[in-house]
Length: 122
Image (cartoon, rainbow, N blue to C red; front, top):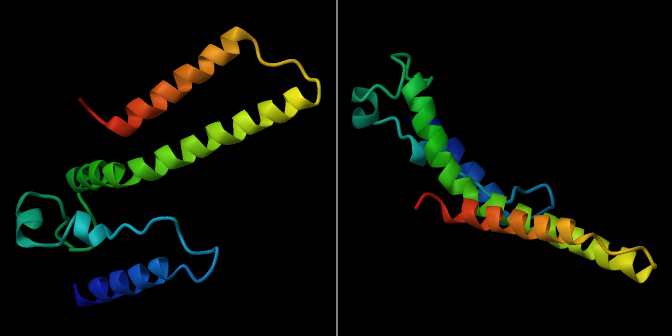
């Protein structure tokens, strides 16, 4: 358990340092999402070996991880939409026909879906 904590602390420091472009956008301390404690062990989230998650543990970790990743996914989707809009503006300035009304409306649908994903369950 001490080694896990030490590794997570080192990873958190490295990821937050921002020293290079190789640093990740987000650090998620998996040990905080699914700690190896008596409650998690007693509810069957960890295998008896203390190293691996059970199926229930994997599902729990996945659900908790999804919540952490939602803002990053929304940011990436937003960036993709902005890049696409910039490409369309550039094409328009070069005399290329703008997208059809159907394509324009489809872009709004994508944006609405992206916002709904960010909002989470009602």
